[in-house]
Image (cartoon, rainbow over all chains, first blue to last red):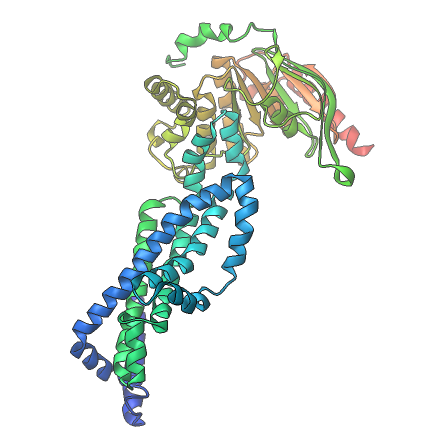
Length: 244
Length: 274
């Protein structure tokens, strides 16, 4: 019964949406009915698929590159005092820059291909991962460090046996934030200048008053975002099997 | 008692240090934390000699610096003043000859009980097969054999602390430092575990230093009772606990037990009034 409550609620909202669009005769270019959106989605399925794959690949590649850059940097920041003093303030300052505001500049520098989109996704993903992993390395309880030190554990052993497991849940927290940011980053960069991708499709279809198509693209985008988030959460549950 | 890897070692126990020779020596040791206006004089100056093979209990009120004393002897802190020696040499940091049991079990939640107990072997690079045998023997001795594969959060507080004892004993240390090891447990488990520790010590005969705020525990377990005064911690009383071993529940009714206990209480409460 309770399991069915949420889907039922969604269904009711959809019916209310469909009903009010019909009852108040709202024009389709302003707010299309769910049935109209569904019909458009079916008609445009091949194009939706193509644009989805473009946005998905930008998102995933950008996220993975951000992960690959931020992990070693987090280790350097957490364990070398000099780098920490030099780099961390700069990074924290950069973190305050709204990255989407940089999108036009990045496209100015790198053109309108796939590369600038990936760069923007990297910029957006990078900080949440870095900040969380650094915080993770630092959240090692003092008693656990005392235990390792009392055994004269070499720093490498402390890192491998203590700091990595302690930082792992923090890494996943950062990744979950980053993956949702990544989708936003990809779409915004496609808004600025692109020839394909779901962001481009939304821009074009709203400009041409093909509102049902814009809605279909937004729904696909939402689904991508949800699927990616749960993919990260699935990995988290595979790797973090204890309660931190 | 079951025979095991330790039975063969019992003769080795004597090699670890002649009974009666000083293993830890403190001369004029004091410790202050912070600087300027924020300075806290936590401990000393105090002199203390711990003899190899003895079980020394230190009781004191909260904040008397008894944990600081243990951390100094463990090499986890350096004294502000004075000299510390371990086995005749200046003490300059932790030693693999010392096993510590902390107030909290400090087990890694991501590792099984066996892996937690094996941690010293992994960190110190001890021969794996022998260490594994010893770990299994220790787990059997403490009744944890069936829980070797479990994660710590599946175990009760007492069992977790037993596992922490196994871990501290894995590398066969010459000396055990016990920093209020029963403080986080309920009264019944405390008593059960301290009697167990007494039996374990009876078999192992390693030098042990117990820090506690329970007079009963201190007297039940130790050969020697040291009562510390309030901050900055100094030694207020230092008497031998000449109770027969092995000790059990009945020891607590021994007239000498009550006598020693009263002496410690008198000192602690007298200081409270002044």
